Amino acid sequence: MRHRFTDKVALITGGGSGLGRATAVRLATEGARLVLVDINERGLADSVVELGEAAPGTEVRTVVADVSQETDVARYVARTVAHHGRIDCFFNNAGVEPTQRRTEDIGHEDFARTVSINLTGVFLGLKHVLNVMREQGHGRVLNTASLFGIRANGLGSDYHASKHGVVGLTRNAGVEYGRYGITVNAMAPGTILTPMLENHLGTLRQQAPEQIDKALERIPAGRFGRPDEVAALAAFLLSDEASYINATVVTIDGGRSERA
Ligand code: NAD
Image (cartoon, rainbow, N blue to C red; front, side, top):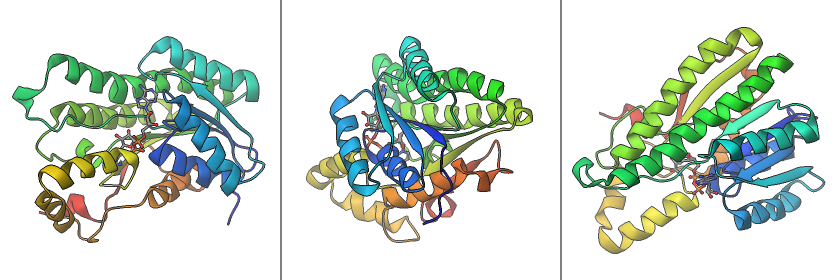
């Protein structure tokens, strides 16, 4: 295993589960010092246990915070800077799943909640972290968008709006901050087997199992993705190897987004 993150400080939101945890493990095995942020304290504790097994000796701190609240975001950034003095890598990843409802059936409050976490949370993370990175003169930012930030699935306008918004934030912030030695990119994962998806699959298995086969048929790879596969891409985009990739969106979906 290469060590692309030796002495690097990596800040990860949604670090208590799924893609955030898998990426934390990947970065830790390559030498990163970590600050994990999540609203779920138990999830953070479980991530620390998993890191201890996968990458013993990793320096990891946790912050319980709600990414949709600016005071919480300012606090997780301030804690990271107070302890480490800088932020080299920011994985701006926390998010919630779609409502799985038609537009006319989505309540205003549900729409606002999804957008406040998936989009405002990413904006607030950018706002507070980019200020630190601009002053230090370097940084790598990776936002988690989605296949549904670049394509439409039908159902879940709240999620589509939030993830398309993440793509817009990414492109603009990359253009704004490229001159300061900073890259801002997004990934657009397809269907990845994390707890978020497992919840959804559990419901489908009971209510409409044929939908799972239909979903698999639409993926040229013929299977759902694994968190470690996404973590490998995240690590690359957060590393110095990706120094000339900026303001763009990279898909990781087994070819699903190109299927007619
Ligand atoms: P997950 O549910 O396993 O992890 C998401 C984490 O975000 C959880 O630990 C949760 O507690 C945390 N979180 C939720 N709301 C928060 C808040 N307000 N403040 C702080 N933390 C909060 O799901 P995942 O699949 O790992 O999702 C990670 C990201 O990937 C999300 O942005 C999601 O939309 C995106 N994504 C996932 C898939 C997939 O198929 N799993 C596909 C495309 C995009």
